[in-house]
Each structure stands twice: as structure tokens, then as C-alpha cells.
Image 1 (cartoon, one colour):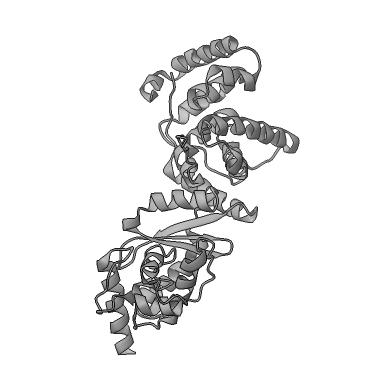
Image 2 (image 1 turned 30 degrees about the vertical axis):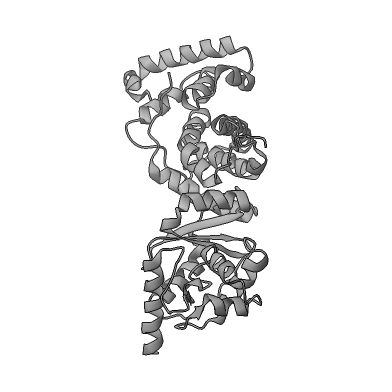
Length: 198
Length: 165
């Protein structure tokens, strides 16, 4: 026989908050995360002590993304909304048209090689502007690697913050996006609207 | 090529969500509702520290209950060292509320060994062999202490069978 007397959710929530504080104090909070609502659906935000390490769209399956982070970085992963207040605030400012560039510490440990070169050049495309996959290949120093640029953008661990949505097809149509074609269009329209108003 | 199953270690958040309530029940039964919070916090902090080295196929709940036992012992020892009479009860955590209040009181009234076996086996789900390793004696003795404890609880808290899960 086993039995399970009730435990109040409030008690567990309070203990969880305390655990997060103590974990951070003891340098045991390797990955902190939270989710925020946005015009492109719920976003998962994850950071390490070095900085923001992952942004993921709802369609990317947040549970799967967290499991991947546990494998790739550390299984010491806790939901710790307060640790991502700065990220949530800057994203909110971006989505409400009050911010055109991000000023956040980034942890780029999930990026290597050519993918890293491509993603690091994404902020070269100014807010409200776009570049073609071919232009990005040029910027990254490998003009013929157009398909690899597509892959690098699709696997960008920090979408929105590192603006892979500004990379579009040569004919001007938006093309693919990790958050779905609609999300890409939403971001491009937001930047066009805000850019014109400015 | 060799085929093998890869057991993936979950994010620690899943461990807290899945086992947080069970560990709190165990802590409340072993050290009482007030010190249970301390024991729970120490348990999960120690577990978080050791988690990267835990084998991916380990029984996480048994591992946590064993840590909870160690931390509960520490909390009791610390409380005994610092125990001083106070005129006013310090403003600490409220004891658990609701319909299970009597159950916690009934568990608290059990003899120590019965209480520990009920905590680790009936609330924590630890097999009797593992319980015996923690509380001492044989698995058979732990089983007897457990049934004695549950028999007492059934008398003092007749609705316990509705709690079965």
C-alpha cells in the first residue's frame, strides 16, 4: 500500500523559487529558462551564466529543446523566470516597436564553424532590411555556400535576437523559417512598419 | 555497427516537477511540517549538485528519497543542537493545511522506526530492501514496522484508504 496525502501547489512553488535562488548562489544553475508570450507565439528563452544561449519557437517543441540543452550544455536546468527578466524586457520592447537592436550578453557555445560565421553576421543586416541567402554567403566569406547559409539560419539557436528572419530568397519572398513562414512574415512586417514610422 | 539504447538524462526541472511532492511528503513525515521545508531544500540542492554524475538509468525517486533521509537526519541534528525554549513561536512556514492535517499528526505520533518506514516506503516508494539499508535491521523487520505503522494510522485516521494511489 502506498498513499499520497495532498501537497499544496503553493508550497511547492515557494520551495521551487527558493531552490532557484540557492542554486544560483552556489553556481549550480547552469541553464535557466522561462517562456514568454509574443506575437509569434510562446518563446522559450534559456541562458547560462555567460548569457542568452537559446531562443525557441513553440513549433520547435520546448520540451525537446530543453532536453537537447540538458545534453549539450548541462542537465542542471531549472525554470527561473527572474534570471531572464532582462531578455524578456528587451523582447517586449522589440515586439512593441520600441527597440531595433538587442543589447544582451550572448552565449554562442551552441555554434561552431561556418554556422557560427553566418549567424554572427546576421546583425549586419539592419533592422527593417533584408538580405538574400547569397548575400549572406558572401558576408560569411563563402560565396558558393548558399545552401549552407540556409541550414545555418534554420538552425540558428538565437532567432529573433540574431535576426535570421531578415534573410530572404533572392526573389524577395520570405522563404523558410524555424518558427514557421507566418512568424517570419510577422517579424518582417513589424520591422517594416516600425522602420517606416521612425 | 552496434545497436544500443541511449537513455537520455532529463533536465533537472523535470525531476523537481515529478518528484517534488513525494520528497516533501517524505520530509514532512520524517522531520515534521516545519522543518520539512529545510530538508526539502537541502535535498534538492544536493541532488542538483550531484545530478550530472547520476547514471542516466538510475531510479531517480529512490535516489532522492535516500538523499532526503540524509538531509532529514542533518536537520534533526541541527534542530537538537540549536533547540532553545522560546516564548513565541517564530514566524516560520505555516504547517500544511486542509484535510490531511490529521494524517500528518497521526504520522508524527508513530514510533520513530515505524514513522521512517512509512515515510520511505509508503510515501517515498522505496522498496523494503532499500528502506532496511537506511533505517537498519532486515527488510523483513522493516516490512513489519511498516505494517504496524499503517495499522495504527488506519485506526487513528480511518479515511487513509481513500488516499491510496
